[in-house]
Length: 196
Image (cartoon, rainbow, N blue to C red; front, side, top):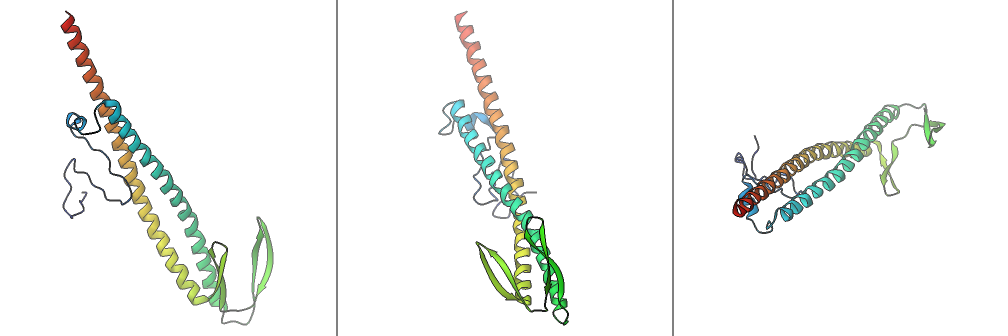
């Protein structure tokens, strides 16, 4: 069941625009009435408009897919950093140093001995690193993880919506093309009948 913006169930043919920034699709139930609308003087102009709309959907789908990929890469990194912070939280109370390996370059690690500490440095992006105590860093990363997970869900819904819009637009293009073929066929029949 799809609901319209006022909470009522959407009827067949009712155009819903659930996702902001995604252009609305043309949804002609009756191609004849669709072709009488301004801007649809010829089948070519209507097909051009529909194709332009379809290209917008494909462009937006590509952008959202790239965002989704970035989020899918970001979530495991945040999760791994949270696990490290939890481990450091446990080791904070002891006096023995924590043995670890850290990344120097691609596939090059160095062994390190880290004394117990309650401070960590987090990369925030754009070449910015800030020092936090472990509790603040953990709270920040948990907030970032929940935000990233929520954004990933929203992106997946937006992508589904876009794919539906694109498929419907393809069907509508086929409807208009078939309408034009039938129209030209009728015209040719009338012309041949008039010649006879």
